[in-house]
Length: 306
Image (tube, rainbow, N blue to C red; front, side, top):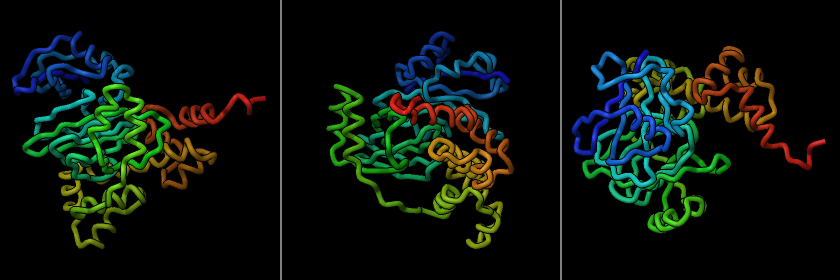
């Protein structure tokens, strides 16, 4: 498989981009002139292309291309302060946890932790390895993005901040201070379901072993209606959403519990431990054993070593 990379400026004109500029954007995790990148199959008449092995996967710092069934996540090169005028942003993934503080405008985000409508004064907290799509209002949005340390404790989803300007001021001086201020000042928002896709997403997050056919029957819906309607909202089928939810639960338990990996796999409804390994690696690009070893190293303090 080869990829085509096309650059599109904020004015909507297509510009030819040189390889070194694209790679520089990947390495530095930013792009100037509101440049956005779309990666798509070779057959779509690209400006240029490169082999899969040429993608600097380890240098994308939070934004990666990932095959998931019949589609690909697209990398989004995100600046700290974004002025977004696009109508939508396709389904994409982030390696690192981050907070999006909405300063103006508004948008809808639908992803691994549900669907949220946000406006100025709202904050979206994103977990590691989260994927979502965004639909923006006609006025667009101005967003401050703050990367959250791996050790941060927060509940992914939507929250509110009484004084977003104070976060912007703190970020101008120190991102660490801005993150600490944000996490200490956010207030949880009430969870609201706009329609049955939101309810199904919440149910799948709580119980990835849910039988979709049975759930559809209880709601008086046909299976094809559920599959198509859910994909229209979240950008992925309920089956793919469930796979990601189960893998995320496994990833968390692997790091926080001392249970054997085989027991975790059985508890979460995987066919076997190998099935869980494939799911976790597809989500995080690392194996359960690697995550367990990393968690054990983090828990080990010098005083506890013999």
